[in-house]
Amino acid sequence: MAALDNEKRIISKLNQTYSLDLEKCTSGKIKDDLEVSVDFIWEINGVKILFEVDSYNAAKIVFGQYILLNHTKEYQNNCILIVIHCYKKYNIERTEKYLKFAQEKLKCKIPFLVFNELDWIQFIKSKSKQQFINYLKKYSK
Image (cartoon, rainbow, N blue to C red; front, top):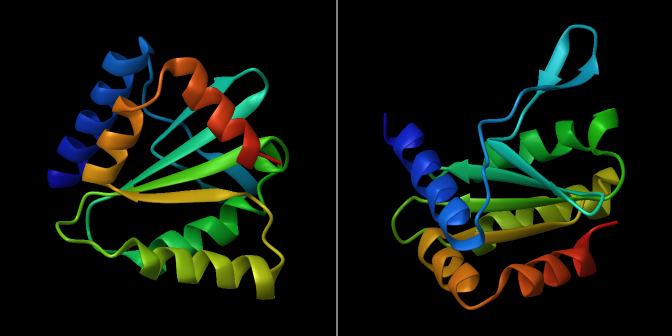
């Protein structure tokens, strides 16, 4: 239940801050019998912003998900992954280390940003919707 509460809280804060109407995401196909999903997607000006809300201190699971996302046709271009960890006192450097490894050694290309929940809330509070979009465009491929 905590995971759904965290997702709802993050979506609600984004919707409230930027007047969005985000909803839960559907799966992307890797091949016929393999799928991967993120918690929600916001598509703006041709850029897909993929949001993953982690509630369980699960850098290794996010790592595997990131590898799969990089093999999904829907997410090959103009995407960025934002990981928001809701686990208390989570050290985001753990996740960054795993995802950088995937980029360096496994040729994963989707850009990413990693936040803990408190830093994420401060981040979106400090930026207008246009500043937020411009910031993310710098990272998307």
